[in-house]
Length: 170
Image (cartoon, rainbow, N blue to C red; front, side, top):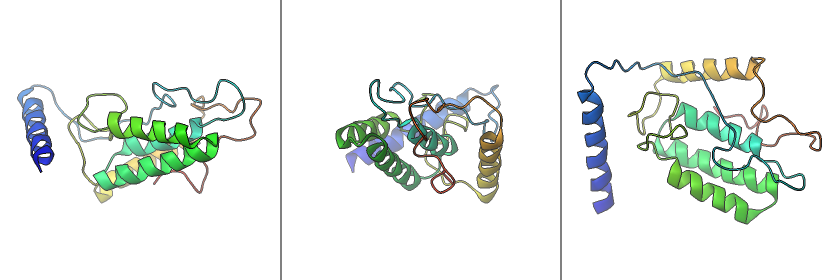
């Protein structure tokens, strides 16, 4: 209960602080998707064939889009399962899951927070139908683009786990 009250006060304070910026126009548009792979963590094992970068890219698509707290929890659970499968290492998957649960909260002004594609201050909020359509269009454009891949397939690996037609977010 006390923790919930503290977070509510923090959210109100952050919102008031953003409103006080006055001259800064905050656009409701979703920014183009960007990813750095596994933010602050290696994209793959330095030795061997374990490669979880595709898991990070799929997770980044969810985090960029944002949404409700329940959507974030579901995304983080998919991420943990993907890393566990890709690495065959439950301890690594648990460590990475803990890191995203702690470091991916939407009220931290980080480039990898939940909903990082939206202007800072959105926090947890389900997307409207229009916002969901905008996110889907931007995601599809990114996936179809000729941009250099975030997770290039190393010569030693046959595929990048975590990102295919069946597991792509949204």
